[in-house]
Length: 576
Image 1 (cartoon, helix red, strand yellow):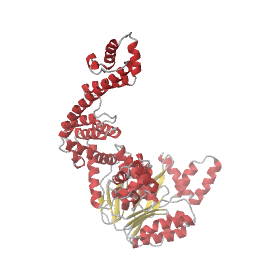
Image 2: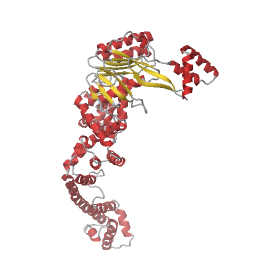
Image 3: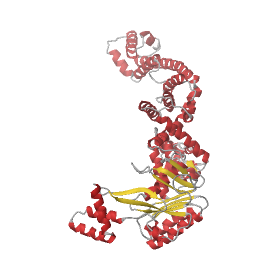
């Protein structure tokens, strides 16, 4: 497969990748979802992520039928990636996409929930040890020994089960010795064996370095020896051997053995002798390094299979453990996949720090919400959480579609081919109406199962016409055998809904003593909610900055029901 065949890889990107990596390596980086290699090759992280998402799950990305659905997806993977224990795990989480295959979803859920349970079982000290090991792996210049150390850290805290099965049965003691050997062998400074591993090798290297330095400054050596008062060649030879022995920690005999016998003058003698000495020392270093390297390789060879298992497994384990931490921190649970429904009990929006759990559902399911309605028209109070409910349902569906646990006490999620999530838009013009209809209607019209989550459709056209369009959308949703939740303030203006649809309501219950709107965010099924503007006006009256402003808000109070406004204020004061 050529680079240009991948979505998002144009001629310029392909040329950059070929120059930095080569065709085969670049294709491998894309197919293995290696964001880091693409970024190192000069592709921006955002572009690399988009390329890999399409390469890894193009069909899955088609589930995200609107920009708002894609924004929810982006937020979810970014949120999950924030719990990653390595940078590579974060990259892999950010390129995860919805998957259509049910077995793949279930298998990922098994791994993530097993990792969640394993993480929960660790105490703080054990968690710190695991995180430290993966941090060292993340920062290591040589990956193999750091991967083995990370694997050993997982074994030392007793992590086991399917998620960590690749590490079952390894010889931990031998693996630790192999890690030490790998750390000695996998070096980037040009030496085959790291410094500090063998004293004899380090001593020989030090002598070689000193001799090489002398060789590079032969005329300085001559001047130094002559400064000692040497008068003839014989004396010069002896002074040379003595001086070089001092500088290199060699014996005088070792230096003398390397001196030239046929030099024509002092300069020739010094340069020839030092050249021979450096060559001899380099040969000694090579011989000793070969012996040490062979011993180290033997230690690795004893558990070569375990080493390769650890290196191959550690990245996958890092991803699973990262997602397990995400699931643990947010109390996520396994969703149940059903044929034709969407329902949640005590679902929580991940974007809110302290959300009120909500139970809701449409289609066929076995949870607490009604089970016979394919479409719900959601009505009720301003700031009542209607949009948040739509977003929560979208979060649950997208997480489940990626094979990840969801934020609820229970959830049943159907299989969808398109998720149409559309937030309320403030603009009011024909262009917005047209673009909105072009966004939300085509997915509903195509083959496949669609989930419609549409917010305040009336905000983009006049209320009377919006009611007509909303009736049409509800009927089309039912006719297309889709599921939908439509948020509106026009429930009283809608024509009779199809029998497969219902109206739900969210109610504001008053003002708190701090004059904050008090809302029961749990929808009441089969009931039209009220916008209750008197609560908002009551707060404005109470918070007026001066008498003139208060009089203006009191005029609004008379319009919406002065008695209701006064009653609200009285209740707020009384409860205080």
